[in-house]
Image 1 (spheres, rainbow, N blue to C red):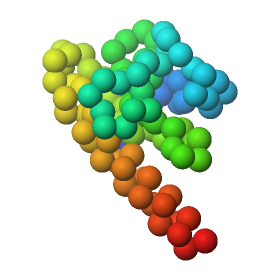
Image 2 (cartoon, one colour; image 1 turned 90 degrees about the vertical axis):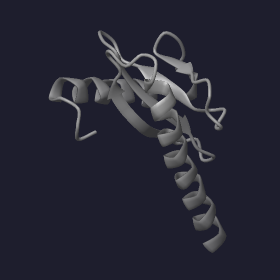
Image 3 (cartoon, rainbow, N blue to C red; image 1 turned 180 degrees about the horizontal axis):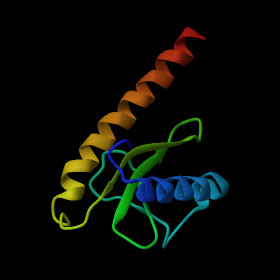
Length: 105
């Protein structure tokens, strides 16, 4: 999130707080399922007042994992095509870490 402006960063924090309160029950218009991800539980958090999006998913331990946050202004056609695979790879890495940790006990 280092590339976000301070205002966008604050919006992301507010949205993550809402997500923390409502968890997986947070729905439209604030959160919606993402199409095209190999992870069926990947969703996007839609921040108020702009085109900032945050891709996230809940892991097997029901922790919300923020994966990608960015403004998609003037990038409507390619934003998802570029960022869903990035988010998917990050989430897959996280899931593998959880699995390895569980095996170690």
